[in-house]
Every structure is written in structure tokens, then in C-alpha cells.
Image (cartoon, rainbow, N blue to C red; front, side):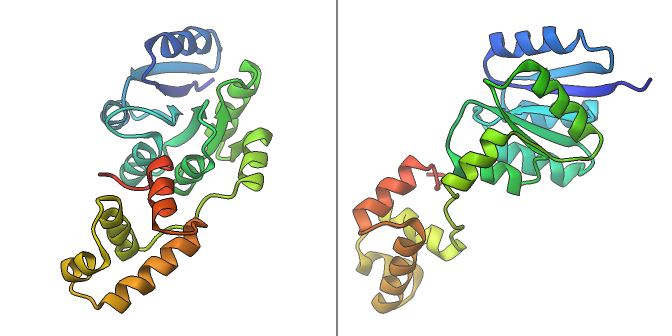
Length: 206
């Protein structure tokens, strides 16, 4: 029987060690490596060529969504199963949009996690019912365009409309148009609320 080659990526050593110890007892799973951050996970995936990566969503250096995107760009056949306690639907949606093949919560039953590993290894999606419910009840925010992201970043940094117009070589009316669109997408009533949402949702890398 061909075993599922599994890489475990989680920045908490105790959690990672516990998962490895449990999963190594499965007759059809071979844990081929571990990683403690996103960059290490990308490097390990490149070297070890796992069939499935059990991926923590919140990790240092590169989060689970960005790590998934980087790994899928290099080797699309590698399956990624996100495992997280993080309840932010935007980050879960980012991971799924980046190519993750499934998402489970860390409080899921162990048997359900193993079943999900086998499911994604077989080429099927494995999204826990709780995750589907979270996504349905709290839909992720619409994606911002590159220009909207740039302008929102400038707003977070405290620039005025005039400063933003000068920075990007557009008219003040153009800036107002973009800000109106940003507020609508974020469901924000004003600039301050948009900035607060951007920081709370980690929408920007600043």
C-alpha cells in the first residue's frame, strides 16, 4: 500500500509534535517532515515533495494562505489541508482561494482530521461543516484592487486626500472615488472605520 507522504507545518512545537506522534500511528500515512514557519514549509515542500501538507493558518514569516500560494505555484499537485483555531473567515477564504484543498478547525475530532487528509490526498475537497457555516454566516470581504490597496495603505499611514493624489499622480476627485469604493467594499462608514478594519483584518502588509 502506498502511504500518504505528509508534511506538518505549525509554529507551535508542542502542537506539531503531538500531531506528528498521532499521525505516525496511521498505517497509511508517513510523516516525512515538519516546519515551524511559512518559509520553512515552502522549503520543506520543495525538498520532500509531500502528497499532503497539514498547514497551520497563522504562522510567522509567511502565513498559511501565502505559504499555500507559494507551494501551489511550484507544485500544484501537492495537496494542502489548512488546520486552524483562527476564526477570521477572510484568512480562511484567502487560503482556499490560494489553492488549499480543505480546511479543518483544530478542535475537530482527530478522526475527522485523518479522514480529511485521506480525502484531499485522493483529490477531493475537505472543508469542515463548521468552516462552511462560518464562511456562510460571515462572508469574506471583497478583494481590493491594487490601486485601492495602495490608497488604503496611504490612509492607514495618515495621508490626506491631497497627499494621496500627489503620491499617485491622480486628481483629488479620483482619490475620493477610490475611497468611496473602498468604504463600500469594507462596509465602513468613514475613513477611520476603514483603517480600523484594514488593521484588524490584516489586509495590508505594512
